[in-house]
Amino acid sequence: MKNPTHTAWHRLTAAARLAPREGPVVAPFGFSTRVSAQAFAARPLLPSLYELFSWRALSMAALIAVLSVAANLSPVLNALRDDPVAVTDPVTEALALT
Image (cartoon, rainbow, N blue to C red):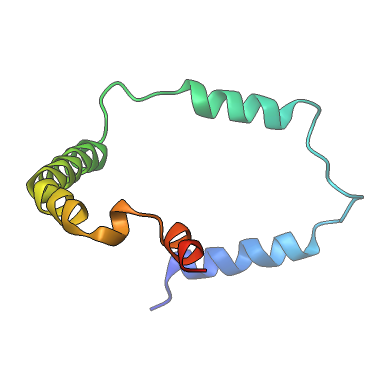
């Protein structure tokens, strides 16, 4: 049994191949401006489910980043306080030796 959409597709593509060709097709003046304005003007009333979950994931990632910095701040500051290289400039130390 033949698929009716399959034969219809072949019939349409064959007709499109036989259609006369004209010169280069150019979009009318202002077409791209109008299309982009319509694309940005149409905002959905409700955000998509993907958008809601992505904002939640972003907020959770930011919260985890802030908490990890806060948890590790005191050990880093203690290591910098105890490190003599961090207190003095190595270039100044090397120039003082000469």
